[in-house]
Structure formats: C-alpha cells, structure tokens
Image 1: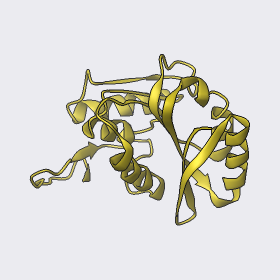
Image 2: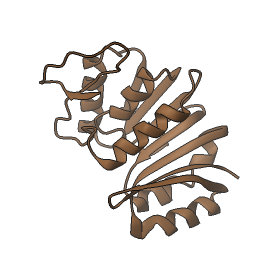
Image 3: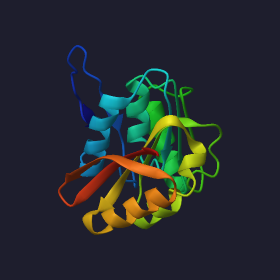
Image 4: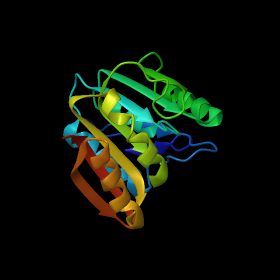
Length: 184
C-alpha cells in the first residue's frame, strides 16, 4: 500500500505500507511504470539481493525494495532536489541507515555489483545506460527498465543486444513499456 505522508491510514496485518511525500519530484506510486515495477519486484526480489535504483526520484522503488527484503539498496539521481526528497522519504519510512541515497550521473557513482538494477528514465537515456549495465550487474541479475513509450521499444531491444543483453520479459500498460533484461 502506498500512501501520501499527509494521509492517515490504518494498515492491515501483513500489509506493507510505504509513505511517500513526492515534493517537487515524481514517484507517487500511481503511474503505470511504477506499478509494473513494484509487481515485478514482488516476484523476483530475493532476501540477499543488492539493488541499484538509477534515477530514484522520490525513492519509492528504493523503499519498496528494502521493505521487500533486499539486503542492500543504493539509490541515486542526477538532480539534487530528487536526492533530498528521496532521503526525506527514506527517513519518513524509518529506513535511514538501510538505504544509501546519493547524487550520480546514471551508474557512475555506484560501487560494486547489483542483483537488480532499476531505471525509470526516458528511453534515450536507457539506451545510454545500457552501455554500463553489464559492468554493474551480477551474473544472473536483472535490469528492469521502464519509462519507455511504445515507439522506443525496438530501439531499447537493439541497444540491449548491442550491450550483450536480452529481454526476458516485457509488459505494456497504457502507453508504457517495462522490460526485464539479463546478460546473454
């Protein structure tokens, strides 16, 4: 359950509640791309996983991955305002110290390797990001990309193949596409 920080809500037993104050950023949890990625994370995330969230914005997926049991979650954005908002949302959810949020141009400042890399960024930036994903993804790991409009789907597939990756799963909701990719 995702709720705005200013709304009261009584959660049910076993329900995971994420509190978000999007401020001036995006990421309220209602957009098709966010909904698709949360559902996929619920299916694939393992307790030992390391997750990188590139372009974290409000931090909603970072918080979700942590609450779903990821061992380590790092999140970055290239906008200082988004970094501040994500840090605030991490604090609102009582996860300070469990999540690293910092400024980065795509994967540039991320250290180590991830089991799951998330990116909800416009398609031409995903094409650029795909060049570095293989260097930051553990064997057997997943890259989950969204923010892709239908017209860009083929360009993403071509860029993934050029980077040595393949599309394992794709989902469409409204005009938006989400793709889960892995190394070939």
